[in-house]
Length: 327
Ligand code: ADP
Ligand code: MG
Image 1 (cartoon, rainbow, N blue to C red):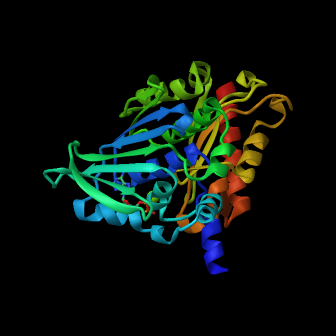
Image 2: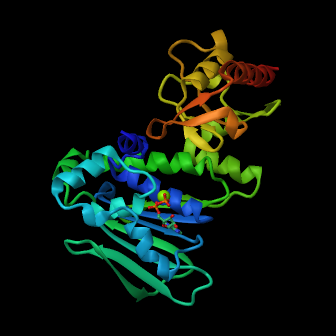
Image 3: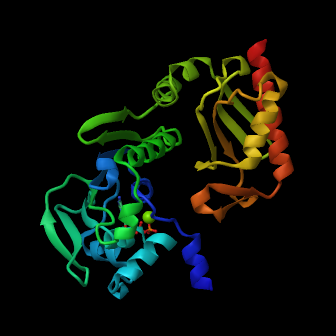
């Protein structure tokens, strides 16, 4: 049961966007300030990520790809299991077991780059010299080529790509200190330069949430004890009925949280009609001990220890900001 729990709690590789998420998280962990993504056919043909992070030392390449007991995967059924149940802490090994993955990396302190990939029936990791600037590139080709059930489950390229684009948008709104680029089938889709000041952030906000949102949203910054709320919220008069920009982060992680959504709605109060959609990009920060993010990683849920306090603080901070925008 413990193993089952660990597996169930892990991230689920259900589609190309889940692969992108794992790869980007690794790049961010490696301190990258520049992340480039090249996608082909919604990610089912190719996902390429290039970063300028710490890199992986030659002697660690094999380990990075084989942490999962890949050699134990002997049947198609096992592969399908891994994909549907998910994994944790073994992203590269797992992704490489359901695709043709190549890892190329060069730590700044190493004078040459090396490349690794798992090949053959036994998925033995081969390492060879390569050319690469400081940082890491990971290429994932033909995702799910050896797991037909998963492959059939994929939606159209357009839909799969839209999940990747959405992921990049929400990541870019949480990491203004990183430059992002995204292409699909060779077409540039997003190019978001690093933001060093509020003006640049405002520009990125416009690129992601639209000019109207960036121009009309109210900037909010508020703190109560150890809880801090900042971000942008659209005044009720500017809120539309169609789908709006709705992003909330708890300690830097994107969350779709019931309590937060409720608090936001309540802050607008009667000023917002039932058809109008609230629009916001909000960052809530509190002591890590005050929040439990392990409720379900894939569902972006959190549990606040002082739920009432957090809720009421968010309501009053937002209501204040909205009030001031009217004055
Ligand atoms: P985890 O991230 O849980 O350690 P992963 O399978 O995602 O497991 O990655 C395995 C290891 O490979 C990481 O711990 C890290 O050392 C290394 N790694 C993966 N991607 C990168 C990257 N882009 N830059 C530097 N190191 C990386
Ligand atoms: Mg990882």
